[in-house]
Amino acid sequence: MKFLIILMAFISSNVFAQSYKEQIAKHREAYKEDFLKETQSPIKEADLKNLQFFEPDNTYSIIAIVKLLKNEKIFKMPTYDGTSKDFIRYAKVKFILNDKPLELTLYRNIGLMVNPAYKNLLFLPFTDETNTTTTYGGGRYIDLDLTKIKNKKIEIDFNKAYNPYCAYSDGYRCPVPPKENDLAIEILAGEKLFTGEKKHQ
Image (cartoon, rainbow, N blue to C red; front, side, top):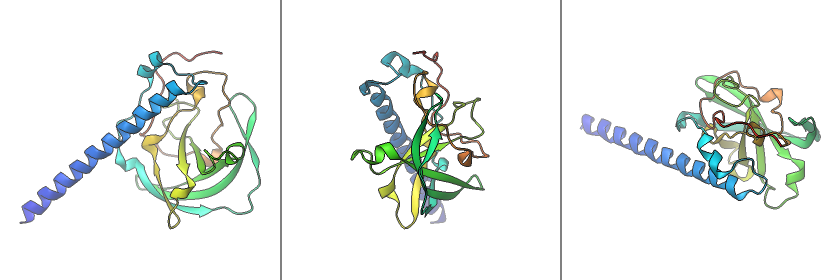
């Protein structure tokens, strides 16, 4: 009986891992397709082969505790082209990853908040210790939905971390992740360095 329980648990975990990999694979296919639909995209069909990703790992899909911020003022987040964009700090999130307690800040883009299509968008830019080695030196982004915050918690999946357009080409206004979102840990998940040649506009 004990062996059967262990066997069933093993099968269940394998099925979960497999379905999770399939979920991330579908997410990445949709991500690639979006490049081809977007008129301002730096990635063309011939470039898709140069998009590289870590293997899906559900260790990097975590549940974070959310603390909403109050009375925050609009601030200018610098971009890599030397300009800036208006953002507001929306919440702090705390979580444990690989036995390390970590904290990040979630932001809202002021310009996008008035667009019905993006009114619930939360922006999570971050840097980590893989930058310039296996991932883009300018950090990566994750998009979250504020309606997904339930009971002061939200799921953050670093397997969905993606590169800013600036990783592929110059000529874009990509926000620079604030220092408060620099993680003192390697995030071995999500998108890796682009292996193609960076474009110039």
